[in-house]
Length: 219
Image 1 (tube, rainbow, N blue to C red):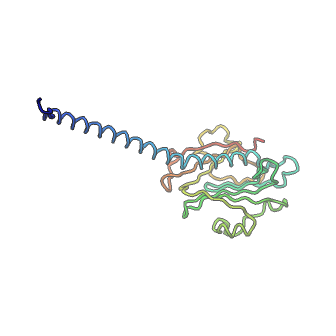
Image 2 (image 1 turned 90 degrees about the vertical axis):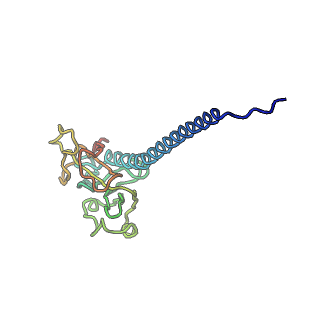
Image 3 (image 1 turned 180 degrees about the horizontal axis):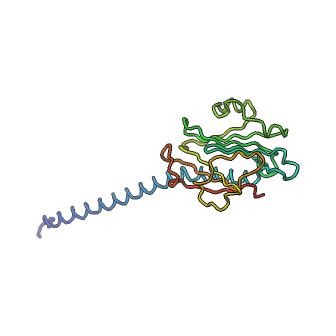
């Protein structure tokens, strides 16, 4: 009987080459999968909190207390700046009209990279127009709680931007060109635009911002 035939050098080289090609292909597929997962994770980390924030603000602005509308008009209050907004709404934790009347405040703490949200129920009309407590934006969550505010925060926010469309600027469709303040005591803006930056800190380029336009007083 002839002994078992071994592999030739050519067969060994072909096998090694095929294995090497297979390893390269698998490595590229694994790397592509990891990159796709990382991109999806980073996207979800900002997309879902941002969507929840915009959804809450949308519902509250729909139910904003407006001047000259029914018995609640005495509670009217609205002030807006570039990085903060405060107003009175009937949208509470349990929905429209089921949680009383609330004064809400959104603002950014740049030193902490946190967006803060505070709400407080109003029992008297004069409370609506009353100024926020001294150093309100510098107070800790515990200090605000003691003053009757319910506070929540969103970590990882590098920038928060608002702009306000007036009735007189209804035709202007670019939120980056709207005024960055709204301080009219007897009126509401037509729309509020919000842009939340989870990326590079201090991003000031209007063209790089993604704006979401929210109507005011739809209900």
